[in-house]
Image 1 (spheres, rainbow, N blue to C red):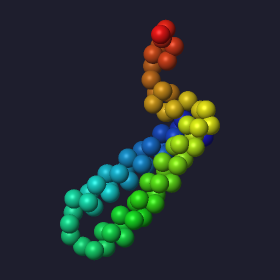
Image 2 (cartoon, helix red, strand yellow):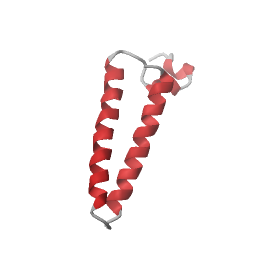
Image 3 (tube, rainbow, N blue to C red):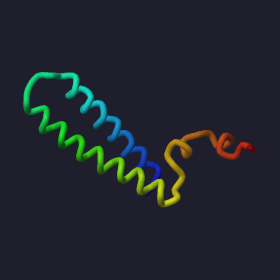
Image 4 (cartoon, helix red, strand yellow):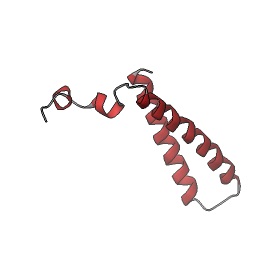
Length: 75
């Protein structure tokens, strides 16, 4: 999976989390529970993709976005 793919996945995960939080705060309507379940399922899928990518040994997105000097700093 490319860095661009991972960035897109993390952005979508952020959007899902924001929408879910909005539904939690909005106490009106029973239909929100259906959407919340859909969002939970999508979140689970997105998190699974992130974990799978990190287990594959690919540089995590956060590290990939960090300045090169900080990745190569002496300990």
